[in-house]
Amino acid sequence: MPLGCRAGSRRSLTMAPQGLLPSRMALRGMLLGLLMVSCFTFCSSHQNSKEFALTNPEKSTTKETERKTKAKEELDTKVLEVFHPTHEWQALQPGQAVPAGSHVRLNLQTGAREVKLQYGDKIQNNLKESKKGKRLDINTNAYTSQDLKSALAKLKKGAEMESSEEDKARQAEVKQLFRPIEELKKDFAELNVVIETDVQIMVRLINKFNSSSSSLEEKIAALFDLEYYVHQMDNAQDLLSFGGLQVVINALNSTEPLVKEYAAFVLGAAFSSNPKVQVEAIEGGALQKLLVILATKQPLATKKKVLFALCSLLRHFPYAQQQFLKLGGLQVLRSLVQEKGTEVLAVRVVTLLYDLITEKMFAEEEAELTRETSPEKLQQYRQVHLLPGLREQGWCAITASLLALPEHDAREKVLQTLGTLLATCQDHYRQDAQLSRTLASLQAEYQALAALELQDGEEEGYFQELLGSINSLLQGLR
Ligand SMILES: *[C@@H]1O[C@H](CO)[C@@H](O)[C@H](O)[C@H]1NC(C)=O
Ligand SMILES: *[C@@H]1O[C@H](CO)[C@@H](O)[C@H](O)[C@H]1NC(C)=O
Image (tube, rainbow, N blue to C red):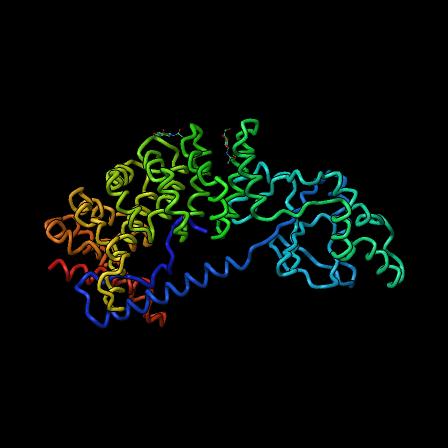
């Protein structure tokens, strides 16, 4: 998942810079409703998938790898019900057999058994690759690889047998090779393999991270694995309840940039749409620590993840937004945007500001639509004096200058933000000759691209939308 902390679809909420017509407001109200429903669906579907993971980190030697390869080749020639694992988790059907060396995890709630290919030991050294959606497995201390080896030994027995026999004989042979998962489970039970709950896993990971005897690599690996668990709302709340959240927040103080980076990675996931955790994080000093990191010299990768965590902490949490403004958050973000070589961060910062501005507008509109006169949330939002702060601190000029970025996607974000800032920054934008020139040249560029889209029969194309934003901005600036 990319490191934005945006909840909705990228393009569904494009702002029109002019005043809001009533019908447009109603439409946006509907959009907001849809957004909330989809977010709710998303969150609750996550809650249902609470897993009890049993991962078998069986070590593979070269010899075993050879055998596995051989077994796999043989497998390809058989017609027996044998499961073919891929690099994704796949549910196992009843009666299917699992090749040795696969990762097997049991979802004890649904009873579903899931299998995928294992990656072997190189994972540990391959954090970068694992980041692309793959999971990093930490060796559990619950059982040793030796235990697993003997548990799985029978699975491998006969791997070297000849395959030029009668079909029936071959089937028996394969049955010996690949036994049903039920038997495998029984073996695990006999070995007293402990099936850990998510909470137990998180406690173990926090202990690993918090232990002074863990190496830096082990600590990073523990954080990396923890991030996977805290995506689930109730897991993140459990992390909070046993004190793990504070350990991760304190990790932001580490002198090690990688520890800061991965602590922020975990926090960003834990805060996301999780009010209970967001509140505790504010109490636990997370906001100050995140801002300190952004305000000091740090590797870009660290700042990226910290910005992500900041974004997750601020979104849908007006109290945190108030604190952010009080602590000088806008100045910190301004320095960040003005640093050299941080264009990536600049776009993310602008997107965050856009999200915060529109979030407050939505709260106002929602209150109006539901005819609630003073809902508490709205009162909270009314304490967030974001627009005046942006104006005072030079954000009118900063946002205007960012329109010079070459990527369409970056321009899209900047255009959206300029639109929402139009009322606040109108006088500045009108006097900004460079902005007029940029807008005129972008208008010409997107007219041409939009025409091509129309030629291709695309009625509501991306470039037409960008052109629309530019046109309404120009109109608003007249
Ligand atoms: C982390 O370690 C510190 C000091 O070693 C200890 O005081 C604290 O209780 C530990 N926290 C957790 C949650 O294990
Ligand atoms: C973490 O750092 C901040 C400032 O960088 C400092 O004020 C705070 O006392 C530190 N906290 C811990 C737990 O070391």
